[in-house]
Image 1 (tube, rainbow, N blue to C red):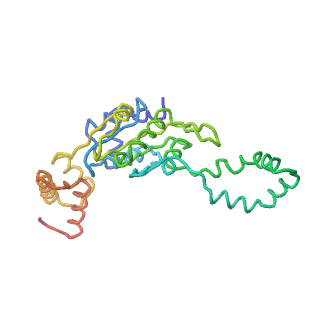
Image 2: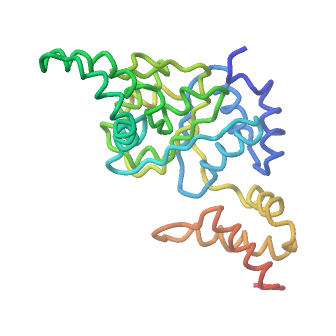
Length: 275
């Protein structure tokens, strides 16, 4: 069994996510199950606020895994996503070890000799203790299987998307000073997109695909009753029906499920009896 074969059936996915107060329909449950069985990343697309990020959080909670999140944005590069060297820490160690360095160089007769002696010690300053692990490398080197959430990949540049493909292909990273670092446990990977731009066909081929749309009135009622049980059924029904009418209008942004829940909580806080 691979690290990501954590669910025994689509039905078990529903039950496990339900324990995290996430209501999964058959399509979501089946796709999540296949993600684990096939060991492929899962690309979730859909409008903002329909539960894509919450799905990753719920999977992590249901499986007891650490959730490692990479929030994408325009200009995101490898140093923020993968790793970078802690130069300030390296400089501090250099200052603290100044006497030892002088001792090492004391017998050097030429600059070339001194450089050679320093080169013999350079591994000390380019070791794992100075490597700052960003989300991608953190997930790869995790001692335990993790859930890696790459959130809003559509906000990142196409160049970063190409780089990400390389990492997801074999879950290993080449660090020039350290060599190749390979995953001990392959993370379960979820990517989310709000459809602000078209993703590359190469990325789509690499992933299983799931489109999460706004729920039906019945499904959203179930979510509200589960998340905000203090709200009366009558008021919950009125609120959900109004939200669905708003979504039918030509609005710049339709209300999301998370906004429905915020409204439901506000109605409870205000002790409202009717809309």
